Length: 249
Image 1 (cartoon, rainbow, N blue to C red):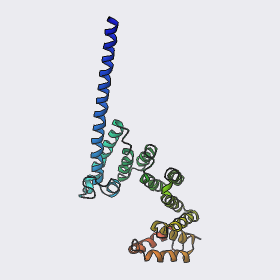
Image 2 (image 1 turned 90 degrees about the vertical axis):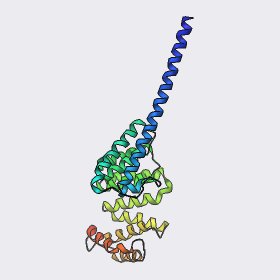
Image 3 (image 1 turned 120 degrees about the horizontal axis):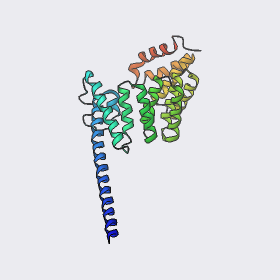
């Protein structure tokens, strides 16, 4: 009889412990969601990439951006919140992506790269992670790493082959391999002749290779494109800064 009572008591205690654990997990999850929602709302208010990357429907999206002097403190709070989210509820996988965005806004390249790599590991289907990660890897002159990221994008998201080609082409262009950059650009406009970034990549690559006739043909097409026509002068100046007034033969 005593043994039966002891077994029943143990069973009751185990049941109570399970209930307490479930309640604790639920509370942690709710708390994590609260921290996450606050972080996203604040990140949106910082403007720039913080606003661009936050989902449509975010409260205050693109409205009432913070004064510049307050952005730093708000980003610190965003980062604290997102790190708390990751600790409380790792199932909120997008927290790493937005943590990377916050570090980009703070211009903390190393931390941003670390966060985006973790984001790729837990949420590999978000195309924007690959795009932003490549951008900061270019800034860090880590071109081989950027090419590796584009390969991951191609393998993970075959439907994003144009985006992968753009990222690869820009990586080659940044590292000075204009021949490979041109190959990527030509492949893009062969698939989509109206693709703006592809045509910019082709024009830039031709110029830096010293093929000015082909470059001028592409630039004339860009001049007639209302998406970029007003920025052609700036574009030409950037080419001269990159490759000199005479280009690279």
